[in-house]
Each structure stands twice: as C-alpha cells, then as structure tokens.
Length: 192
Image (cartoon, rainbow, N blue to C red):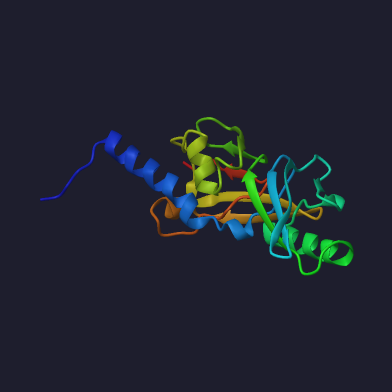
C-alpha cells in the first residue's frame, strides 16, 4: 500500500524542509558582515569586562568600536573582526585582550528574481540560503527551472556566478549555499 500525499500536505512538507535547511546548511562562521548588520562587541582584559558596545555597520562598511574608533568591517567574518580588534587593542590599550563579536541582527538584503511567485528584496536574516530565499519569495512558479538556479555575487568588484540545483536541495540531496549581503538568486524559466 503506498501513501499518497495531497497537494497541501506536500506543500507543507516542502516548506518545512526549506525552513529547516537554512539552519543546517548555513555556517555562521562563513557569513560576511555587510552594511545594516548589527554587531555586539565585548572586550575582556585582565579577567574583567572592559568595554561593551552594540552598533550597526554603516553604509561605508565601517562600525564604531570602543577605544579604536571607526573600523572597516564589511566583507569580514565575526572571527576576522574580533581578531582585528584584538590586534588594535593590544597595540595601544590592553595586554592580551579577548574580543567577542556577535552578529546580533542581519540587516543586509538579497534579491530573488525570475520564476518565483513574489520576486523582490528580502532581508538576509530571513533568507539565509538560496532555497530559503526562494521560499520567502513564495516558492517556485510552475515554469521554474529550479535545477538551473544561479546565485550571483560581487566580491572585490568581480562577479561570481554559482550554479545551484535547488530541486535537489529541496529534496535534501543537494547543496543549498549560504547567501551573502547583496547576492542575487535567479530562477530561470524552464524550456517547454
């Protein structure tokens, strides 16, 4: 006896898989900070908390940090930022400081275009992976070629195109790449 699911049950299963997939696939250590992200910075030195601040990354990619002022952080991971601040603070202020940087809020956006039900801009904290972004965009249209999806990313002025099979990712059998601020997810129309 085979179990058949109705269209509503199938849609709920796909939605549940898509919502769980971003958490399993997106590695927070790989996330690169961008404008609009809110960072929480804590500094400990001599065994005691010294400084604590929370602030948003400015449009120019910098953030105001305790004691050191403006630091350009766009494109860096939280670990990279902590290392940079540790170096600067050890140079002029503290002996062996420990710096923790947490991304408190993701303020960056990604765009989804092509054969999805609601193309547009979505906040990165809600659309952490390519498939997650498509789910937020209402899912694939009936004409979508999810097997030929593309993630377009600009890094250091160079455009990178990552081809992704989101049909396999939706089934849990393929990669669902984490997105970065400014990424574009394009879902082409399938050939009839």
